[in-house]
Image 1 (cartoon, one colour):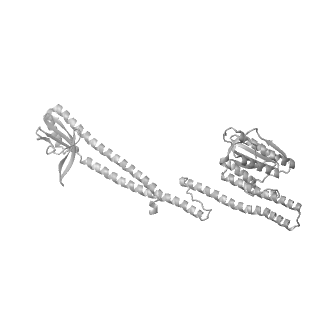
Image 2 (image 1 turned 120 degrees about the vertical axis):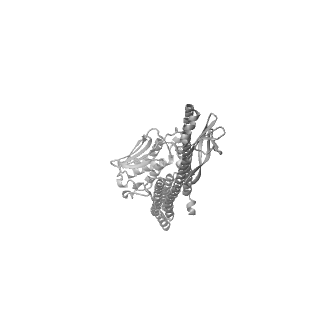
Image 3 (image 1 turned 135 degrees about the vertical axis):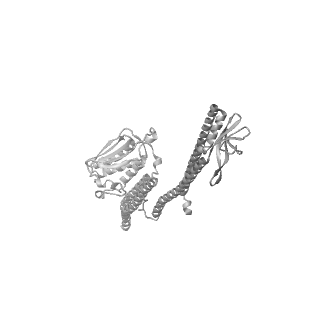
Length: 468
């Protein structure tokens, strides 16, 4: 219970209960005061109407007629709890149903007084309170009042009803607050229990959802999506680790074996030079793998997002295409370049260059005959890079798999590469808020890389420099 009372949920429920209690009590107090005021107003109207009627009778019938009328009404068993007393200038009773002029009076407002009087009943003498006003006729005084017994009883009944209603409302508020607190704690505890299991290594755990779509469900859905992403990253990390160990073990073993054999063989300067060149080539391939992994990690982590500037995508594409034109000529392929004069975008020059280079490298590598085209342009609010070839293409069921690290199709095993090119392209697309997709080129493959071309400031001279 101590932990329960120390929770934020309980404090929040207590705060809402305090506001609820204050609202209920304020509402009931307003209702009570309004009811009491209404009852007193009714009494005043009744007495006022009565005394105005008597004054009219006095004006018509004179003093004797008024006295007779007061005596008549006084003998009528105190109808409507009305009280009359008429006295001479010396306060001697002339007519009425009150034994004498009241001695203890309390003014409540100008012209109005309250006073106690005794009522004899079969059960004894009771003291009641009356509200009245007086009229001076000649030298005589006329006091007209009304017994407040019924009004007081009604007011007490209203007060009692309000008190019980307030107690019931407060009790319901307390119970509702406790239930709300317990419900909130139950939802929070489900999140805590799930995270506790995850901390202990059970990454398959997910936060249970009620399906209500409330804030807790939205939070749970976001946390579950985050956990799915973390699990995918963990699985990907394990796969990457296994792939790195598998893909690097072979070249490292080959490199070590070559050096061992060279040391065993008879010393030969020409042979040493050849082995060193092959060793450097193997080391360059290993460095290329590590550099590709580093670029992918930087792009996925967003660490280079702050380096984005206004760059000319058309200039970057032309510079990369110029580097691969000799490769296309050597393989007897036609490299077609469709690039506008300028296309300013917001992006990372180095990563965009790497992405375009990887797409061209893959297209030229797997195209045995025909053509490869590079198209850059604007499609609405997006910058669009298309690289199409006339090679064997990729089966539709493998289009998503090839973006994973170190994934290579069976037909590409004999082709030089490390299976990281498309992974880098996807990471660069994600960094720039874009997408990359594969589609059939009939024949061949078309890779479409698109990202938002947000409004940018004009190109500066330093931004249009050739890509390294």
